[in-house]
Length: 64
Image 1 (spheres, rainbow, N blue to C red):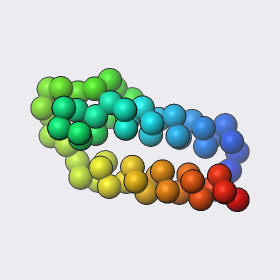
Image 2: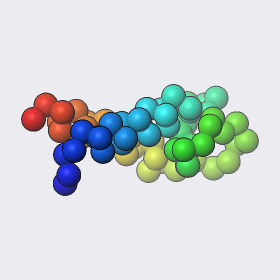
Image 3: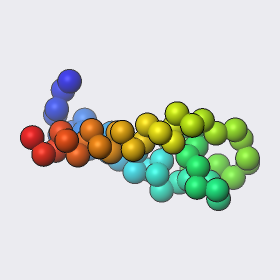
Image 4: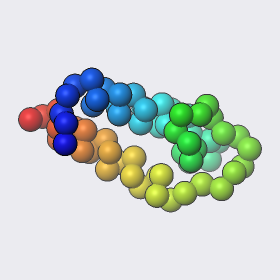
């Protein structure tokens, strides 16, 4: 894995955007690059579960 800070910052930026644009029920959009989705489209549990893992892995990389 490339630990170049510019890539880590890009990943964290995308994850932060997804986290801050949850729908009214607190669920993530399927497409993390879009603005908040209030249309009621189906959500994926995988999107919800992986965001915690991504944050944890990014924290581990920053500690090293």
